[in-house]
Image (cartoon, rainbow, N blue to C red; front, side, top):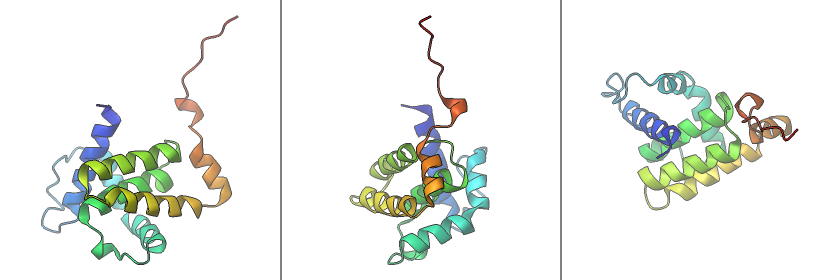
Length: 141
């Protein structure tokens, strides 16, 4: 299994645990720095989720779905290092693994709405893979 996928599973598990006040200081993977980054940006992330899923208040979203959504919104908006399609696809796959029967559809819809409502310039940036991560092509010369 892809190490990036395993890392996202660990972060999702941490975010799930952090959604319970009694477990917030006792995360399963305490040394996962991205979890701390997501938690530090939780207000901004939750505002985006609330704005783009108005029929689903944060406290009514299943905690596993919320953990996956929070991670994906962080990767999509706060710290975009992967193309948006990769982030959304990965979130859908996590939802299939960790969530309920229809979690993947809900997460896909919310993330799609968030992405569609990004300013055009930010959409283009999110769709492209950063230049420093693009593998070099061998020259045929």
